[in-house]
Length: 327
Ligand code: ADP
Ligand code: NA
Image (cartoon, rainbow, N blue to C red; front, side, top):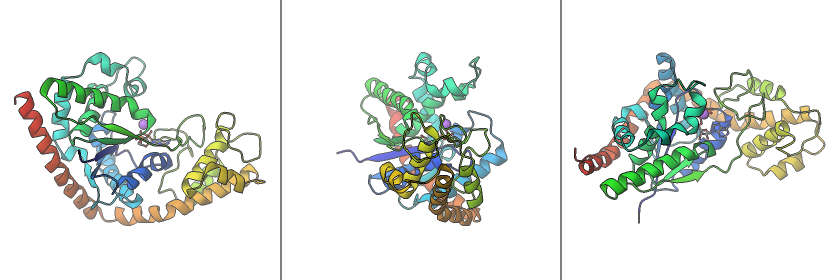
């Protein structure tokens, strides 16, 4: 019986937002203790596929480390590390890149959305899904928590594992997705698109460390519609339905329970209710991020200890890869 190994990554592009939390981090926390081993990587190599300011990148790595720990990732139960500190990620990426065809990569969503219309992205952006495959396979991961938007990238990792195994003998388990069941959180300014840290619109994205006043303002300004009633109908009422989904998720209730409770409220009153629920959920997390963020030394120690543990495992797998390919 194969030991279950979970791997997932998050880019160091600032403090996580409500969508990251509900769509990913919350389940990352839950997975600790449910599987043999759990690795979470702050994937800085991925983040430089688009331009990054060095000082901001350095800050972001610590922001994300603090955020993950504050959300409940326990460095004693999970291996929490910075991707670039384990050089085997790039080494395996090269090997896997040599097994991947250009047409196979060209149609993947990351390239289509982030390269510009004339397809003038970097080679790194183009090859990003291979690095993702390397991240996963480097630990012989069996399970990968992913959002639906990442499923095609996981399929590439699966294909790459099969290609390697066929060519060089059985080495990698085929990693399986752990799909998030949470509905995508939508932008508060445009409820037809997902909440994203790259959304340029003001007040569109709620970060997990936003102050109560920020949160109240963002929900007060949330785009809804002309019907002042709380119903759940994502097709026809995406704005209010997004509020209902957020409300249910942060209070651990079902959508039906939330709608029932909110009967008779006008939308403006309801926005206030949701804002308060979000504040209640994230206040302790915000305080914990602030506490951790004041101790960079501690965070750096957690990351270097995590990198040591990750490297211990990665080097064993990469040695096997080397042996199999004849290095
Ligand atoms: P962003 O789109 O803000 O850059 P990422 O692409 O870095 O976020 O996503 C990191 C993780 O958070 C992924 O697992 C992704 O599926 C999840 N995620 C991102 N945005 C949302 C959202 N609006 N709702 C639910 N999950 C989300
Ligand atoms: Na994204």
